[in-house]
Length: 405
Image (tube, helix red, strand yellow):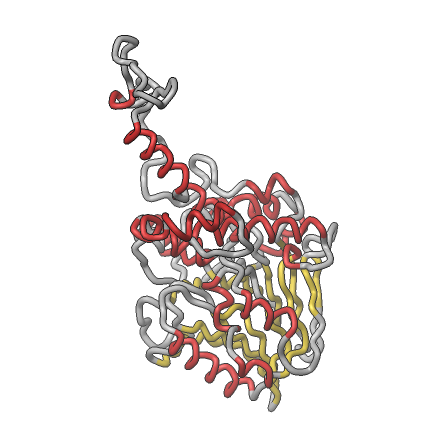
């Protein structure tokens, strides 16, 4: 059976069309469709190509997680005429799971607040929308927050759209990590569902410990001298402390209190980054097995999810057979553990990077990760660099890079 993977040029985002060709018949699987760096016109071209290549019939649609750079392309009315066999989403999208609903509501509320978009009248959202959006944009926070937004139209398509009334599955099922699943219409193909974990603690663990990830900086950071808890500009002596008239006993002057109030109202960069990571950690992690070859698609899964997966012997047994890797989170330091590359993926020989450097994350993809792959003589294809034809890659300039086996 011939296999093809079209890695579409979505900039910072993911969109992969997998084709399984046996004789005169073909079955297609779509994994994600989104971007945060390209204009809608690029996604329109990509959707057009997907519909034409698949002849408006997809055996399976997988949305790894709800980030805009993975689902924005599903906000397109043409999907209503595309027949889909099944749709898979992470268990955190299950509308009938109370814990999943709680996770989604918290993430969406925080994303709305950080982006300064008024939602359901929450006072924090109103304050941010009125006073803090410009400052948030200036510090590059809105991009992260909007990436974590509800993406309601796209998510509605995934939950309710497409032709053929496809069943929705929210995976992995509890206590079935590593489950091998079959999909009607894709004969000879097995899908191994490795994540996301259902473990609350693991979901909350997003950054690798020292030495476990491909970091740009040295893993050992020099200790900083510990000084007083407050900067000198906020310190006054007892003699200087004289309350202003009609203000009562206030420690800060009027202008200082205004600065403190503004700082409290503005969204924190740490909060925006934490939201971004938390949603990444809910990514579906899928290994696709066909004709003895294993291909890994981990979405943007981060450290906690990987930690749970690598601790499971059944999952590791599948990972050890992987030959083709879709590099997680566009080549970020916290999405590809060193142990995964250097100890587990011992057979890997092809790596696909759907990536584009952006201002907020200038060090993506990580040089150390690229160097580790190159040291293993892995064939690398990147959407931000045009590979030479050959080595199993075919290029449709400005649209996709296609790998064939």
